[in-house]
Length: 291
Image 1 (cartoon, one colour):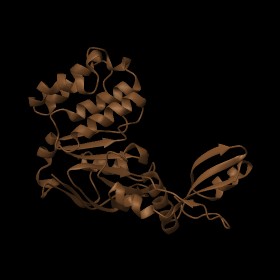
Image 2 (image 1 turned 120 degrees about the horizontal axis):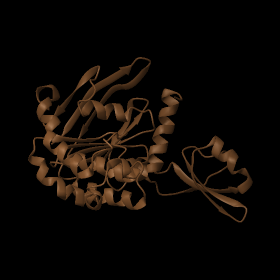
Image 3 (image 1 turned 180 degrees about the vertical axis):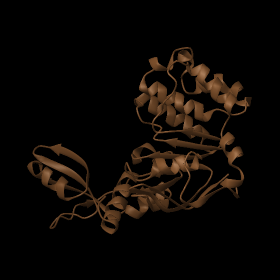
């Protein structure tokens, strides 16, 4: 079950949202990683069949989207970034309603999904009385109904507290080999241990497509730690890409991604997905110019 995005572009009235986007999402979890405004939500809306592309095409399981739209809509689950659920309904009634829209057979899974997302005790409470994190979990619950073959999650961790975040991560980890999942985020740490593939976007362009491990290996040698006087930290953070600061007795330990200040060698350190992401955005900025 693989999804191929082939030369997809989308132009709004005064903004190019996507420019010639191409990549292949294999079974497992693929993360769309990029800053706000990079085109992640637009791309997910196109894949969810909610928005037409201006050009390009999508292929799922070897068949063009256009030849199987009805089947795809029944077999996908989608969580938009902005959830607008009917406040007068309850989690149980909403999931039953969504299950019927998916053909009715998914209705038998409603109790299981409520329990999986920790919503069973809230099943009869009005949605407009739930917290933001509870509503987000309900949004994820409706997307998982019927065990979708294609799961699209737009910033699924937004508004979750630490426990909710860990819970949802565990749910997605258990299911990621049962479906093709495409998840968008602007925070690398959210998907470093979850994704097998990372597609990095900037200003509507794909600037990287690889595994987290390969991206970290690519950035190796470009991340250093160095000590500077604490009162000079602001100058360094203004002129260089500093991803971490630790203070100790009037000194500050900086983690610098990319170019080092003149006359500083620093100590090379291991790289994280966040380091690789910052380096990619930094180098793409030089090529594309600032947004």
